[in-house]
Amino acid sequence: MDLKQWWDKAHKENINRWVSDYGKTKIHKLLNVDVKGTVLIIGTGRGTYVKEMFKDDCTIDAMDITESAFDKVNQYLRNKFIFPCSLPESEYDYIIHHLVAQHMSDNDLLIQLKEMIKSLKSNGILGIQFSEGKKYNDLEAQMKGGVRRTIKIMNKLIRKAGGEIVWLSEGNHQYEAPKGLHDPIKYYCEWYGIQVKRV
Ligand SMILES: C[S@@+](CC[C@H](N)C(=O)[O-])C[C@H]1O[C@@H](n2cnc3c(N)ncnc32)[C@H](O)[C@@H]1O
Image (cartoon, rainbow, N blue to C red; front, side, top):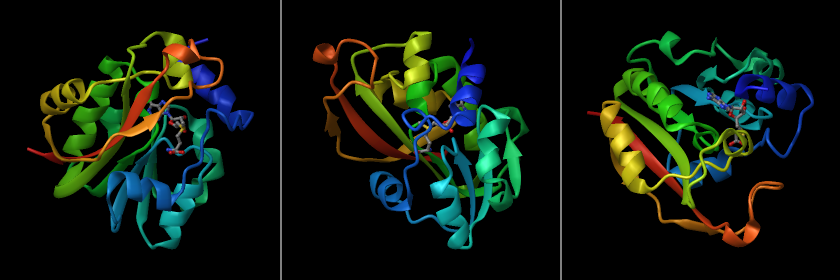
């Protein structure tokens, strides 16, 4: 099973463990943002954040890895994207990327970052959550959200993609391993939020 099929199944079966559902309060606190205007949400999960931003009168586009992700949020979306290369240029005030990076290889993340950064307005902000810790990057880690990155690597990817980090949160410790993934004793990570702008 590849990643797209894995997510398709997770969305269709509504597997809470993987298809998470963080809301505005937590996401905005971690990323230190007050989202308004035209927003692109990456990874819609079970849809609560999309619905909350719709209530706040934002114009919402979304990108996810599989069409079935949009089933729960179709009526709130202006545009839906699967492929990063389809994103419009200079369109978004905010792009929100929460609990997605730990499911992506460096290569996929770099491709996505390049297109997301191009699709920001000149003063737009891309907010990304990522986690730092022991390095796992195999397919199982990508499926279960165990891909970790240092701040140095995130910085390198973002620079390469045409952006710069303009704000970094404090680290937020987590000791618990994603269920069924790796040895919990070796598991430790720090969660970070960053804001990125176009260079
Ligand atoms: C762990 S959930 C996070 C959901 C929500 N953002 C939250 O914070 O609760 C991961 C979401 O990202 C989507 N996703 C996984 N890989 C992706 C990729 N390469 N591009 C876009 N979305 C992806 C999944 O389908 C799922 O909707």
